[in-house]
Image (tube, rainbow, N blue to C red; front, side, top):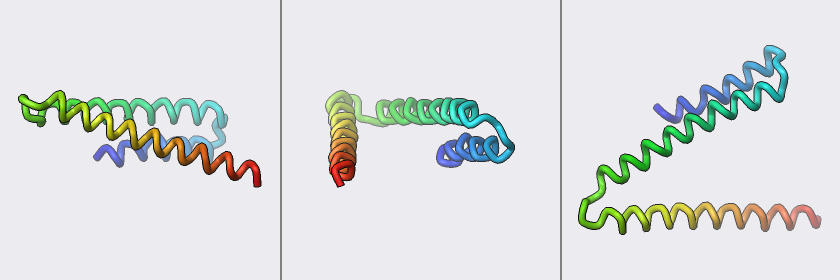
Length: 90
């Protein structure tokens, strides 16, 4: 369901551009709606992680989950930055 909700602002941006709306306005409004949907999805995900975790080790499990998530994001951004810097030299 949330995947479809993420498509709505993106389709809205495309539709606004096809109808001749300002590129800046279409992107700002469309990305603001997209960010709202992503933030809502992230908040619900965090709530569900906490509510379904076992009470005795909840902090440890949640901490490892978010540490792994942050590590994956860092690794992905580092690889992207490295590959972008290599392309600039070519």
